[in-house]
Length: 459
Image 1: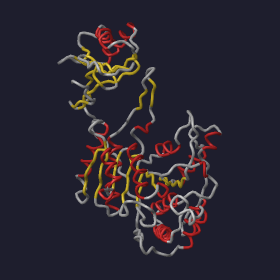
Image 2 (image 1 turned 135 degrees about the vertical axis):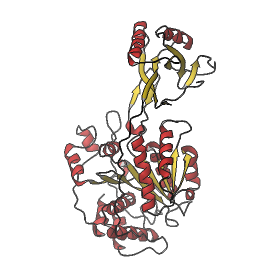
Image 3 (image 1 turned 180 degrees about the vertical axis):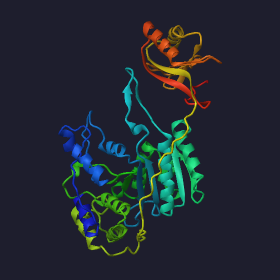
Image 4 (image 1 turned 120 degrees about the vertical axis):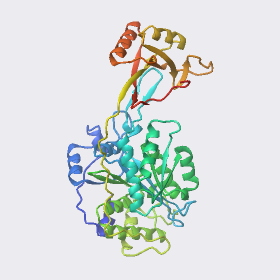
C-alpha cells in the first residue's frame, strides 16, 4: 500500500487519504468482522475504499472481511481485467485480454451453512432475479463503454437448473437488448478449460460469485501472474478497489511483494473518480517499467529483481513516458462510472402450495422410513419419493446406491387436491409424535402455474 500510494500521488492523483485499520489486528481486538464502527463510518462518508490485502485469522468465528464489506455496501459487481504483458511477463498466451465480471453478493457466498445430521452438512446457494439482472446489465454496459465486442456467460445450468438456470435466462433476456454486442454462454467446467487453453476466445465473461472467484484467478495466472491482477468492486453508492490476490503474511515487511495488482487497482479507482489523466500517466509508466525489465521476485529473474519500494520508485521515474512495445493505454477524458441499473417492481406471481420436502435424520432403511412417514399423512397427501443426497432410493431403489443418514422425503397433494400450511403442520406434528427426526423442511410451490422446485429422479 505504501508503494502504491507513492506512485498514485506522484502521478497526480487528487486524493485525500483517510487511513482505517482493518484485518487481523481488528479481528483479534474483539471485532468478529475485522472492521470497527468508525471504519464503517469512514467508508460510508468517503464512498471510495482503496484496500490492501488483509489476513483473516484461521479458525472458527471470524467472518471474511472482503465478503462482509462487499455485501454490506452493496458492491455487487467485481470487475477483474486479466491482460498479458508478453514478452516482459512470461505467458503462453501473449494476446490475452479478458475481463471477468463477477457477481459479488449472492450465490454460495451468502455463507448460510448448517450441519443437519451426524454425516451431512449443507450450504445454501441463493440467487435472485434482481441480482442476476444487475450484474448482467453491468457486464454489457461495461463492454459497450470500453469497446468490447462480446460477453460470455459462465454457468452450470445443466445441473443447477433453477439457480444457474435463472442466471442464464436473465443473461439471454438482457443480451437481446444489446444487439451491438455478441453474446454466448458456456458451461463453467468447459468454459474454464477453454479460458485456460485459449483465452483469446473470450472478451468479457460474466458469471455468478463462486465461479467468478475461481476463473478470475485462473485467468490472471494464465495471463502471467495473479500478482498483477487488480479488481474493482462497484456498487450504486460505494466502490472498493483492491488487488485480486490475498494476503501473504509470510513475506510481509520484507520488501519483496509485488505492488502491481494494488497499483493497477488504484488506476481503476482514478478512472472511477474521473481522474483519467493521472490514471493514464501512471498506467503507461508502469508498462514502461515492465518493458525495461523492472520486476519484483515473482516476475523477474533473481539477479534482476527489485524490492517493493524500489519498484514504485522505478515507476515514478517513468511518469510521462509511453511504452514502445506494449500498447499504450488511453482513457477517455470524460470517462464516468457505469450507471448501475435499479431493479423495477414487478407484479407478484400467483403462488400455490403443492407439497413439502421434509429432510429427516435417520439410520433406517428407506422402506421402513417410508412406512412411518405414510402413517403420518392425511388422505389428501401422498409420499412421492425419498432421496439420499439427491438420488431416489424409494420407491424402486438401486441396490448399489450408497446412502448416508440424511433423507429428503417428498410429500405432495394428491391430483386435483388442494393443500394448505395447516395440513403441513398437522403432518409434521404427526411425525413428532411418531419420533421422526426431521431437521429441515422446504415448501414446494408453483408460481403462475410453473414449478418452482427441482424434480426428483423418476418424477
